[in-house]
Length: 74
Image (cartoon, rainbow, N blue to C red):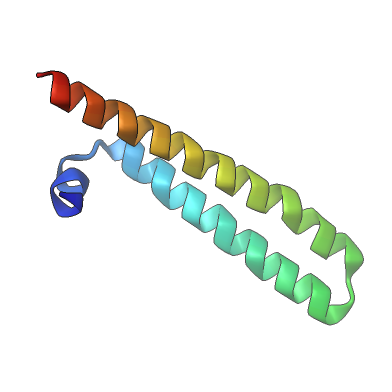
């Protein structure tokens, strides 16, 4: 079902998912670099980036759930 959904998913959904994954990855890298180098500002700046990525991830789950629900109603 996952392969079928991904193949039929809209471009906006795919962009949302990849944006979320990218922001989470960038935030994690910022956090690792900030904490290993002792740069407290960089480590703290990574938290909102990770948070935005997680919010986008949840939005993607909601969009996917709505599309699946609409598919069941047909």
